[in-house]
Length: 364
Ligand code: ARG
Image 1 (cartoon, rainbow, N blue to C red):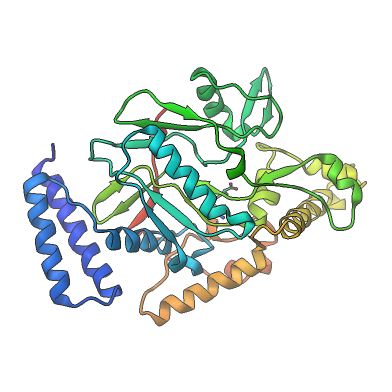
Image 2 (tube, rainbow, N blue to C red):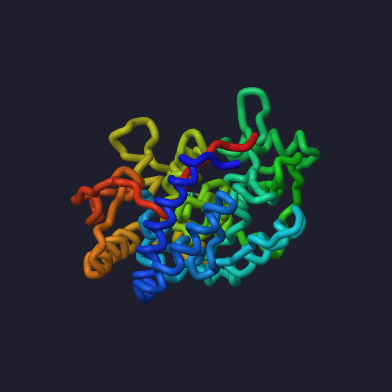
């Protein structure tokens, strides 16, 4: 199964991870040494090794801490880690996911969490085909797309598998899971596990006529988690939203919901010239509506100014622990008014550390 060079690679990764994690967990050098020996023996015998729950838990947190693209890392230690390495079939996996969704959503008081499924080398190797657990369908109708254009390819896959949606702009896609390379199974998400927020504006009563909404919790489900040389290809995780992700990207990108023109019309901004800054003004009103609506409904969300301050606190906290923070500036700056935040005026080292969450190829 594994070649000797693969084994050597895993061994090196394992030693580095265990050394670091055990130190951070306050264990003795003796304990770390004993564990490393045990892992090397397992590697020798089987080509792989199995993380203890404690290692899994801390590894997932370190991977969050290491994610150069994430502005929300101040909270890395609060991650709840669900161990789902013991699933028996697809339905069992789906149920673990629904439990995660319910725990994380928590009636709006969102809790960061991750569910870790069997590692890629195990018999029950599993993939979640969705980009996020909750995502809106995008139906291609000739030149136009109804719904979220970002979901067009996956929506077509779901339809091929026998799913069909109502055809609105905001149809929640089904969960699609494949196990051990078998053809995938799909499950409708239980309604009670999908919290959504209808958008209203604090001053403009007509805003609700736009009939915009977004889901409450971003659950990224297509990234691979690497801990100490072991790959977890299904490890869906969530935090809470920063308002601009919805208001300055999902709903406003021209390649997504493209709502700035509708918002500008509603507010009667002068769209005949760029110099009225109608796009910027519409962007602001849309983002005001996102933050206002989430808050009004009691759903956790952070604005980009606060998130930037939190990130700089995270950096300070890490320095105090003797760890240098890595980051990717182009991802850390928010997509609106970036120069009004402290992050803009800084630069970051974009070296990638492990444990890590990584983008992987789609399975379809
Ligand atoms: N940007 C993605 C979206 O708008 C979500 C990425 C993760 N975001 C987060 N706040 N954890 O859906």
